[in-house]
Image 1 (cartoon, rainbow over the protein chains, first blue to last red):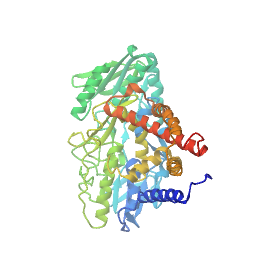
Image 2 (tube, rainbow over the protein chains, first blue to last red):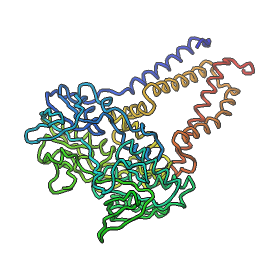
Image 3 (spheres, rainbow over the protein chains, first blue to last red):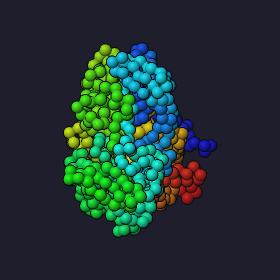
Image 4 (cartoon, each protein chain N blue to C red):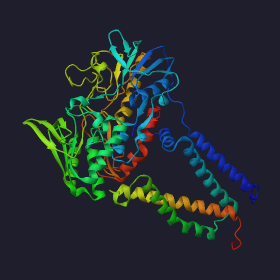
Length: 439
Length: 119
């Protein structure tokens, strides 16, 4: 700027203001947090998903000299909260896809393969290549596997055709789900929305998919041609009773029927019929669109390792950890975090955000010969989309208590635009910041 | 939110826009604000003629900001669901209005440093 300044006093004042602003900016810069703990510990993290990646990024900041190895065979990292949006045509397939290695910090070794076996007695992990890793500390963050074979007559190659959707299977399948779903929206018919009997990741997603397709059909003017049924093995529509009631009311308003205590057993893609197990035998339902969510379990290597609960979730194999410390109940040098952890709630990215700092504190304290009272309270969060443009920001804990982040400002059981804005604009950046260990 | 610190917010905003774009926008906002303060100090008075144009631009800034937010988030006025949504909507509108007014006033002052009809 070459404009003449009125006089020197004006210039000095201006520069003084600029300097003040600079000082403010400098004061606001993030500083270094905790001092590092020096260690030679060998830490193996199984899985580079949301939990494993976040933990790796946080541990390298806390530990000096630790040998951290991350084991994950997938080249792609998936932003799974985006799947519901992809499957409703609101985001492209690549919205959820990035590279696994781009999120991992320097100083961490990535083994680009999966674990074949875990021996918690010998403290070793066998990789698929035959290599054996020994560890001082093990963090199981493998995520879960989708047991599509458990649904008779269904296979993943059917997704996208003949009215079959399955958005959990990945970004590509979410996109193919939208192909089938958009046809259903255009043409109408019977829509069946299912849920498995097992524990599952993001238990809100089956409801979101139902709400989104209902809304899109309304906006397309075709809702009168279709009939929506939500069929689930559970007794209620959501695990938290106060939320279940709210969802029931919304389903009534939107004319979405329910078939509770119905477990999808098989489909006949040719005849477009689905068979459900109920307490009184089987029930058949015809469909023009069906959304399949298969049973979900821990990966085979985890289930065979002896780390799973022996008396709970026996068909699913979640890791036997204390629900507050996430430390294994029999092997104190083993932790589980994320979907694979055997805790009553929380197979979501929001749970990961709350769980990882707890595991980090316990692990670092243990290495330093110290203890910590860091505790995970079961917090999880579900931005329950009820239409394109509105959501309910539902947050709860182990007690089924609502634990709103913005009490008195953002009502958890109100369908709000601001909650949609958060999901649409802020959630993925927050997730990415979390992966980098910064949120 | 857990640990909603200044650092977390910066990290989230960097991810939202990309680090380069975010800091470019921050610098742009700081530069415009500083330029605004600069012209106020330089002129030692508010030019009411310029301020009138700035005021007239405010509704435009408000409407543009609201439509922009709705466009990028695939939402509309029908999605307003509660009091907080109205507050957010008004906040977006006020931010757009004030932002454009400051920009217009500053630009006028820099382009026409001394208005012939003033003083």
